[in-house]
Structures are given as structure tokens and as C-alpha cells.
Length: 265
Image (tube, rainbow, N blue to C red):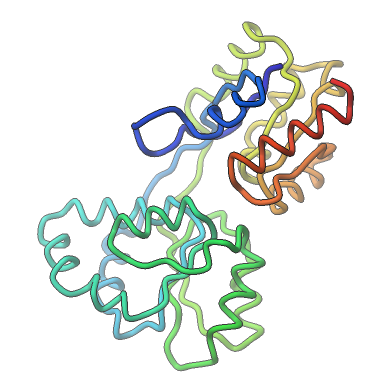
């Protein structure tokens, strides 16, 4: 059975994508279609803030893209030297909160120690942060995307925990998204399941999928990588057949297998 994954390939070049690999163990034929493109902005402002860890209580990352923004900054030799010489060490005396394992891995790559990666979504991470932080004069620095949800900032604000948000990337549809979807449906047919990995993927893909699927859309079992994406799907009128218990290849593959089995697909 075919499964369409609406996500970018994994960031690292080595080996197969873990989602395709895990779904393959269940004998699913999975295909990735990149959905999003990212434009990085305010990078000078980002590094200026990173240059003053003494001004902040810690860091928050809820997206791998925010780490990509830092990596772009560190390609500059002088910035990289400053980071390696003292900034990295100084930030490591403070908490670095992350929302999931993928983001945690990228935090480790720039030499920092993540915590909270088991949270899995912004709501749970906000609870985790609130359990460890008290109201203080220093803010947590939160490099984020233009489309960030307000759940985490709202919860922290209600608890009196200062937060400084800095938008470091903007999200747009991938340049070849419509072409890739059309090609997939014409060559592969209607998949047994389609997986959304973000609210943005719902926003950018749904209309194309509805058009390409036609009357067969009711035969597709739609899956979500997590509760935030599931909420976006439901708001858009998509029936959610399953949601991964946590945002991992193993939990997603298991959820899809159960959903397709239960629906006798």
C-alpha cells in the first residue's frame, strides 16, 4: 500500500529517510514530497542577541529551522570563532529547551545541551518550562518562524515568565509543490494514506489534494504527525484517521498500520 508523506527529506544526507525506512518495515511504499520553503531573515539581529547570553535566562527552540538560522550565522568565520571561544560555553550554563528529538539533535550539533525533547509539542513544552522556570527579570530567547502558534508564548506569559521572540524565518510553499503532487497522483494513483507534518502543509496542500483525488478522497486515510497538525486538519474539514502518539517514525508507522487495518484497507 502507498503512503504519501508531505514533508521535506531529512536534513542529513546519510542513509534513507527514517520515515520511509520505518514504513517500509510495515511493507508500505512511502514517498516524500517537499512542501515548504524557508527564507531566513534577521540573522544579524539573531547573532547579536546570541552574543549576549548574560541578558537571557535561556533559549527555546520549537523548530529545526531556527537552528538552521544559527548554523547560517556560524558559517561566518568571526562569528564561529566567537561562538566556539566563549558564547557556546556561556549558553551551556543556561537551559536550552526544545520541543522534539529532531530539534534536540540540531541543538547538540552546535554544541549545546537540550532539555525537554520528550515534550513532543508546544503545549507540553510550555508545561515543562513552567515547571522549571520562575518569574525573573531576564527573558527566555525564542528564535522562531513567522507562522509560529501562540500557545507557548501565551502559557509563559500567563505564568509571568518573560519571553523574547525573534522571527528568523518565513515559510512559503515549495516551488515545485503543485507539480510534484500532480506527478505523484498521475503516476502512483490514490495513496492509501496521506500524512501531514505541519499546519502549513495542510494550508498549502489540501486544495491540490482535493482536486487531484476527486471522489476518491473519501478512500484516503489521513494521518497527522501530532495533535497540533491534527487540529489544523480538523479545522480544514479533513477527517483524521490517526495521530502519531509522539512525532517519531516508529509511532507514525504504527498508527498508520492500525488505522488501515481497522478500516480494512
